[in-house]
Length: 254
Image 1: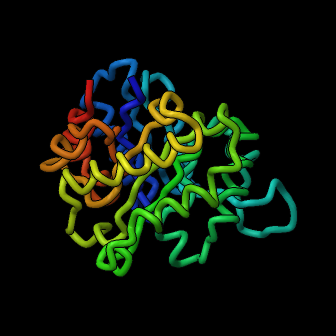
Image 2: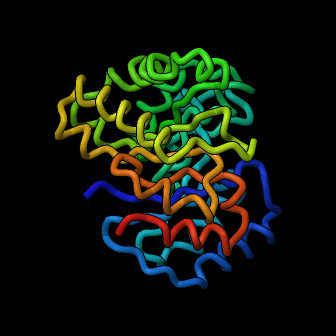
């Protein structure tokens, strides 16, 4: 069975003490995970070591960086490399979140470079893709997202493509309170898997976890995750509420 993942993206939220309390509150719920389930906390850079320490003895719980730079090292003041992340034990990194694409103009080529560096540093990329409202309204979302995969992922070998996680974000549903219906989510996830299958074969495509990321909440997670091609969620605002995120974790397929 593919990994079923509840990934929390804190974005630029929480002070250190608030973040520490949030983690403690979630972990104190003692949600026992099956071997096919994982929980990942994508926390701001200053909290990575703290979060890593909090989850160190928790089976199936991991920490992710929210971003990395597309160069290995050098005179890039303020940036963080994958080697740095690896050196503090980080196992996951979010790549190409829609906010990074929109606010920082990250291109598909830059994201391909980040993916390569993550894999070199033994970090699993959580690669984000998805369409804005204008593309959805035009009915061209399938082609739009397919291009994102082709330009950022299709240089990877059959071995390396299986080392990534994909997160589909309908950008029009992030932070807006709007959510793609369960049927819309399944339709796009199935399309993404078909695109991967056309390039790498059905068996390999069937091994890649694809998360849904668009206003996932405690009251809709179970319906979304029940879809056969939806392998969990990349959760924003709801992950800042311990009780709600625990409900989302419990909604993962077993």
